[in-house]
Image 1 (cartoon, rainbow, N blue to C red):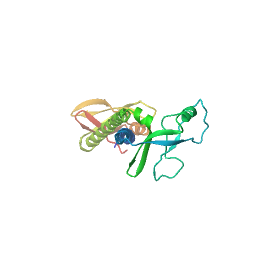
Image 2 (image 1 turned 45 degrees about the vertical axis):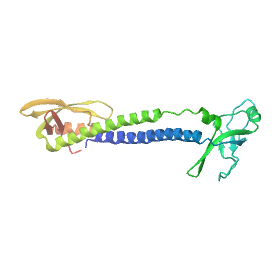
Image 3 (image 1 turned 90 degrees about the vertical axis):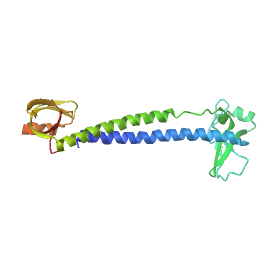
Image 4 (image 1 turned 120 degrees about the vertical axis):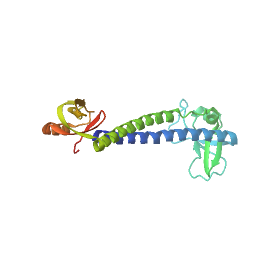
Length: 229
């Protein structure tokens, strides 16, 4: 397989795989959150939970996340059963009587709870970010397939094409690493000159220049230099 195309196929495939994993995670996470909030609202289990100050500095002016303890047996170990997602100031904490209304439920034996204000303000999100990531993934899948098809067809031409003798004409650098090679050969009785894709490195070019002539395989207008790469 052509070295440059092989490397691109590997790189694009790995990028696509990573993006598919990330996109799928984002979509599943958003869909799961939406379902969880919908179920919390439908079951409508609400209790007044005792609020606890967490290990941070609290002032009257600031708004903070608070811990809370549910007045039911949860089977959880620790100082609190959850934390608020809505932030409250110390003044609000005093006004609320050190308690907060919390939605809760048990799912597969696991406690799930959120403060009432957060649950009732929650709006189902659309998994647009995950879909966008998957669209980027599909673009890289397309690139990987494109270069795989080119590489496979080039290998097919190299193995099954008509044989001719090519003559090196010149090499043109396209990047710091790869060159296009201009060469001529007899195709179906006609002398033609073609320019290859930018797939040859400096060593390849030096070898082609040194030998001057080489085997070319072709099918129709597609031709490849048959090298021991």
